[in-house]
Length: 111
Length: 113
Image (cartoon, rainbow over all chains, first blue to last red; front, top):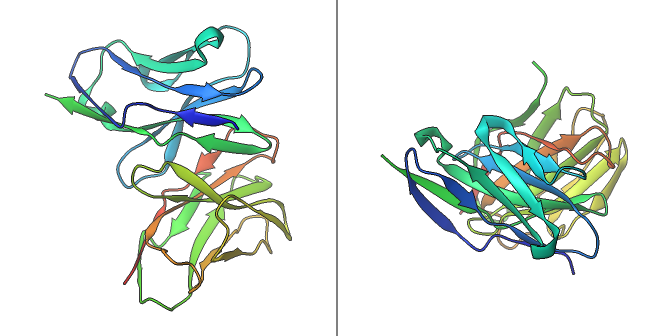
């Protein structure tokens, strides 16, 4: 069965520090992968997506993610976080006309 | 501005009552979706529709119903049969069912007491 795992429920980083959020997927072939961000009480916004090609993808708000087939991972990174990045982040995979979401990682930013 | 609207933002109901959540989009998208979000659970698919007058059950359809009489509208009814209806409900749309990118509305928080 295909699934998306985000092993960290909460992550806390200091403002200006670098960030990496982990995502692992289980799937038999190269999946279509996404990262979404959700501010409190709001809908989801697409940060970036990977379908094929270059395994390092750039997204909005200065985020990037790297697809590593050997590790079944699609980790999200940002070199320097801002207080406004505090939110919940969801990794997701596309399968059978549906998007399957991970359980999310809540990012906290220390001033 | 194109987008998805959900109303109301907050909804309160007594147990045993049916309640309908609104979702409207002006993106001219064919496909629409309803998700339920609970803390620490991610998003779970309730129903989806790829075209007017057609919809399919998602992973947690029990206790919910939908209609798709217009392309722009995809209302969700939470029935009294839903055992634990208190949650945050998100509506989304995409160009069509095969389109990977979904656009989300701001959500409705339903509280049933």
